[in-house]
Length: 294
Image 1: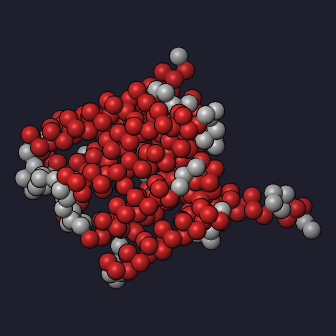
Image 2: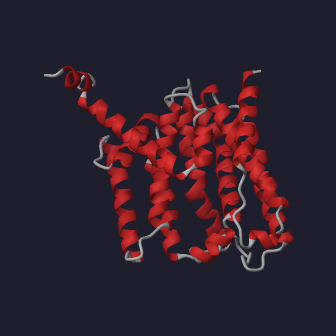
Image 3: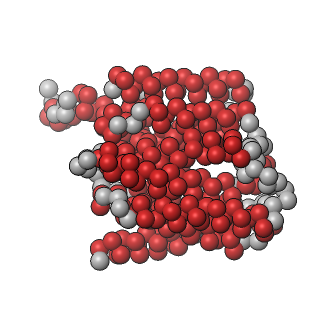
């Protein structure tokens, strides 16, 4: 055996496979999310790897729905999504999957206590995007819960997994995690209102016509999501040090985006995607890091 081969083989095979799965999850995050990537780097290990594995699975499912290939019909998208959910279910039970992103998620789920009670609503919302283009108040609340709020609860499980009396902390902080997930989703809906309308044919906000959204609509929607952010803020400060700073950065980035949306003329919202510029993101991250050291 050559020295190089011996070096590669020092780790047990299953450990190398787990590491490879985690690397695949991190590649997905790096390719698809700049804001999340920036804040997740502030998470301590092993929380960082766990949260990235959650978001990688979420992103894969989202891409199945939102980035279909031209020659793939809706029924085929649904079949792929259903297969992914079944694979996740089996992998959580078995602790192993041939799909690297699913494997990384399943290892995290088993370590943190994430069950199908959170996974199933998520996939239900993803399936909704294949068949429903408008929402009423009830379907909107159900969609936001499945697509975003349960993701917040999954992350909370990851934040608290190694804490003493994790279940008691989870029960106390879950309402804040729900509100933070809802706020993030609503911000994204508002800034992507033109793309959702033109590229995907979707109208998420009940009673809001993306072609005719006005200042009153915009401000009402922002008041609602800013209330979510405000309710989540107290929970953020109660998180363990291993996750508090990173979640604080994410909270501030989305609050910044909400403020920019409020200042953006609705005519622009109807046609453009509002972003937080890179230098401003960097300033928010740096300020949060400095504050966290005081």
